Amino acid sequence: MREFCRGGLRAAIDPYAAYILFSINFSTYLHRNGFNRMKTIVVNSKSIERKWFVVDASGQMLGRLASKVATILIGKGKVAFSPNQDHGDYVIIINADKAQLSGTKSETKTYFRHSGYPGGEKFRSFKEQMELDSTKVIMHAVHGMVSKGPLGRSILGKLHIYKNAEHPHEAQKPMPIAL
Image 1 (tube, rainbow, N blue to C red):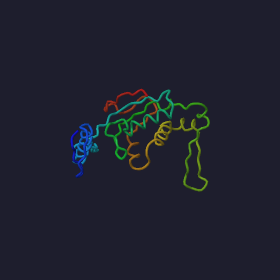
Image 2 (tube, rainbow, N blue to C red):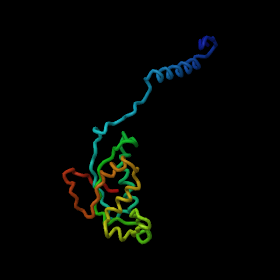
Image 3 (cartoon, rainbow, N blue to C red):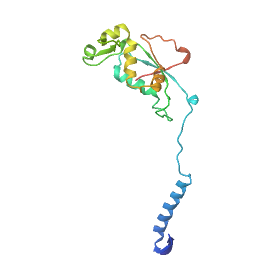
Image 4 (cartoon, rainbow, N blue to C red):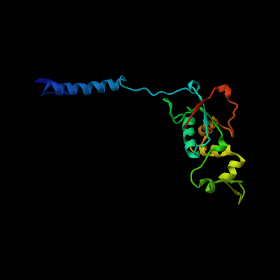
């Protein structure tokens, strides 16, 4: 046993206990002097690399498709993700006419609009909306899964939806994704 001085008091402590006290004080010293700190990565918006992806909606369930597309658009899979920045990639959805709903939702689901005037409520069924414009159905589903406000609007600006298999984004060389 050796004598170990801590705080002005001398006490007889075995060498193992002295090592423990020393290691606790040493780690505290390192932490207080900045040797042990992890750095937070904040990415400049100009340095974010954005990729282009193509998703085929034929035979896909609408909600599952929308949630996976929203995750790609927001950029949650990236290492430097932060919820207050737009880190997401561009997504092209093709064959929007062939998206599906499960169960009896295709008969019971309705879309609501309001004209702004008293009594100006307007309802459309899922089938009517798919016949008029199927891209709005997918946009509505993805919009529900993205934050509302300026950041959400910029995120939705990276989503491109087309009714059939052709799209004008071949120059960006999009990579196909199977969801």
